[in-house]
Amino acid sequence: MVSRRYLRSGKTLALAAVVLAVLWSNPQVLPVNKPSWMPRFGEPGPPTDRQQPQEPLPRNLTLHLLPHSHSDIGWNLSFEGYYHTSVRQVLRRASAELWADRARRFTWGDLAFLDMWMDDEGDTANNVLAGADAVLTWRQVLKELMRRGQWEVVGGTYVSPDEGLTTWWAHNTIVDAGHRTLAAQLNATTRVGWQIDNFGHHNTVPHVLSNTGYSWLVLGRMAYRDLYDFASKSTLQFEWRSSEHEGTQGLRTHFLAEHYGLPSTAFDFDYTNVCDEDVLLGELQQLARRHVRQYPAHGHVLVMMGDDFRFVRAARAFGCLDRLISASRQHENWRDMKLQYSTMSEYLDSVQPHLDAHAM
Image (cartoon, rainbow, N blue to C red):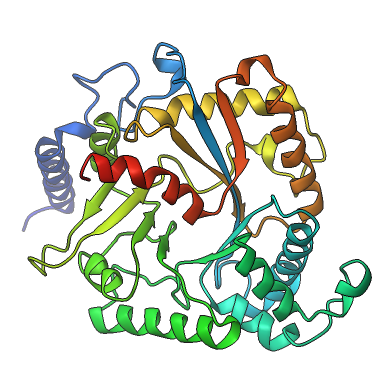
């Protein structure tokens, strides 16, 4: 009879052999032959400014601030829990802040919370706006903000699909449900796909979306090796075609160079009331340096200005962002740069002529 000690040793050797085989077949995870910026273990990530020489920013560069609130349908709280503790306040307060200043913008993805809000308060007088506007219903307010181009609904899906497990039929159904909801509640549609927090993307996505009225798709997650390859070639805007539907129309795609969240915690106005203009403008320039070389040379940088369930303190956030935009016009270091609010469509419309000219 073989002793238990030898059996345990055999299992250990077998496990070690499996680990070595995996490492041998994936040499990129080993701590050898790597540039200084790359982690010694694990997948590569793109270089950061601290590890590369500081290059001068291009002249006539425009930074597009994109205020948004990423509101998961369920995470640490239930769907109803999130609605009552934060989402309802975000929707109300962001709408009121946009109404107060036509230069401001806000972007919202997925329809489930918006559908709940319209059912809950859509036909109720807002009682928040000044003067005669206080009698407008929230539905009237939101529809007017969308008509002005201040508020954009992106994504168009009722909820973001789990693409790793979602069939073509289910994905198409969730897009259809979102479009029907948007049309029924606000008589609106969308042309920008919004998948900034989906873990994995099915190769039928461009086929489904390009055949349902979309002209652009925004993605937020990609395998690190692919991300570094795209970023190093300045091709984080590309045309995505479905490998399962040869000959069909592709979909222009913008990949976020960094997480969909705020540039740094200094911009997290839900948790800080500090608005240091010099510090924040400096951070925006650092972000521009990181991003500008990862995209085609069209002179436009998208700045994601939001995070999970943010803009509960919408007045404080927009107040500081207004100050930054105003200060940038007077700042010596911003003579050749412009800072402005944008929706996702406004940013994409700005880069479109360059991409058309260079046949992306």
